[in-house]
Amino acid sequence: MLKIIEERCIKLFIEYLLSEEEIKNVIEKIKKIENMPKHLRSMFKEDNKNRYASKLLLPLILETIKQRKLIQIPSEDEILKITSEILISENNENINNTCEFIKKSWSKSES
Image (cartoon, rainbow, N blue to C red; front, side):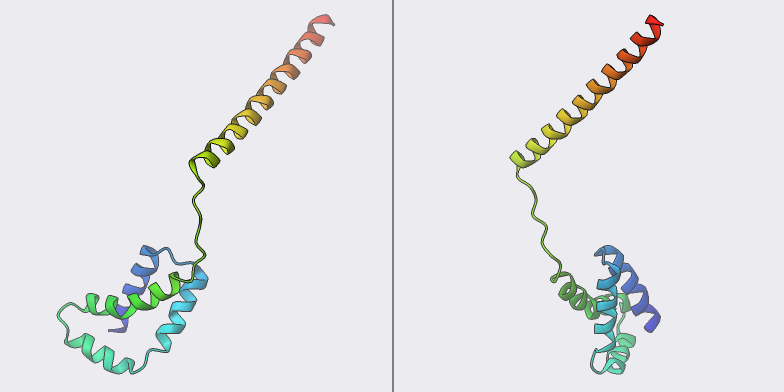
């Protein structure tokens, strides 16, 4: 039964993209589950042991990921502005490189 719980943990950790710190957090919560032997006996009686393990583990994982900082998606205007700045910067760099190349080429031809 513990092997099934371990396998479900791994699958759920990957599925929910848990960080190392989040995994440690969930493992600590698993260690604190009250009456684990009772849960293991109940799981043994179940036809679908994987589903039982998931029902036991999922609330702990969801509780952990709720603590993640929210990432704010930039607006369309912000994306366009930043993209423009990058393109202008890249273009300026290319122009500078071309000018340097022409200068070097020109000076070689004059020699």
